[in-house]
Image 1 (cartoon, each protein chain N blue to C red):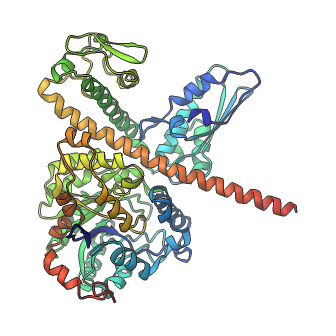
Image 2: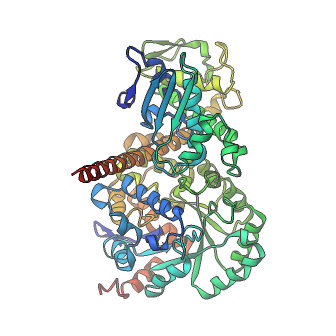
Image 3: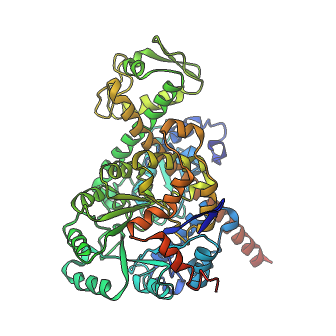
Length: 269
Length: 338
């Protein structure tokens, strides 16, 4: 999806760093990159001023999540060298004006939307970071189980027992073979979120832990897996729902611009 | 009635609407955004050939509804959800009074849901009693996220909600449908948090709580609650629509629901006119749970389980005897083919 984002950079400018930062911005409710979801409509950089146009699945997407994404985009791009100003626009979102005014000015949600449950915005974000942790962990567990790791072997793993080699995870323990290609992503995403939540990421720490930081006994692991699996399915189903709505939104926007172009021509004639 | 290999399946559409979203009924821009959002759901997840133009979607009328549900859509009975939204629609979106117009014409076909808003407090008690006395109210549909005088919603465990739930029980209403589903602007998302259902279900063990849209996007939270509370049921509308566009996700959602809740607590719903029962049911009956999911979750979606989901479970909740109801329906205008 990132290849489809129209970018305008100064001649000779390498926009990789900007796109990499954008890629790290997530839809908190879906735990997926806004770039992969297709929410980024365009990106421009001019004299250190970055402008990002977002298009969300519907004009009626929840204001609090829309605010979080716009704010994250601004913070992410301000960290890129040479960028000193960021303007985020939300297109036809119902609260575009209020969100843009607040985010581009660095003002908090509570000021822009008094009385909209602002106090719980940080809590909302944390709730979904935690759900994302479980969803990511489930994918890693699924990979480990697929290559034949038993519950006992999984419970005994420490972070230092797994390493990444090309696209595969290598598990240094008897009873587990090297994991299939591609699963290095699930390991990396899991460890990233684990660090983000402030959980122990040292090499000696158990690989699979709960949100409280405690490892599981062999007896507990299956129940934990079953719960994490449902969290992952919920996140993925939501992502799928949003993609379907975004597709309609895009078609409608294309349709409207076609109509307005035709109208324009008509006036000229 | 859906027939397959000589077997008949009695169908109850547990969640459908008879709304008026004509522009003349819009009170403000929210009335417009509400129905446009519904239309986006409709066009985003329906098969291309089933998509309606926006103006038909705003007000489809009685004949279209009767045809889409009962004549071509396999539905035997339907639960009319009342959704008021007076702050967005001048005459309401589909109030129990509006819904009762069609219920009165086909009394055996519809189950009519009323509602309450605990923010009315004492002042609403008489009106609630009157509604139950004057209309054939058989269940309630509660919209915890509805805006009202600056309030952005309420919770099922608010003290006044408890008073109304107790009153409902006293008046013989057993089934409480609670909308917990995708965030629709202009409703606030926090009001879709499902955890308040947990408290109410524990404190009112004799009431049934049917969580519409299985709490999506909070499917996980819903599953934990439904596992703990024996009187919490899953309303499948919204989830059903995945059967077309994303059959594998549909399978995974069903596998999870069957895993946590079992086959006796899942109730079909179309959310008509957002989606239509005809294609939903045809695709649902043709759908088989992928083998890898059967193995992993140790569940299946057999013909007998589909029969429960499509009608038997809701019939049990509403005390409907399928045999005698089928006989009765065969004699009404629709059943007799008039």
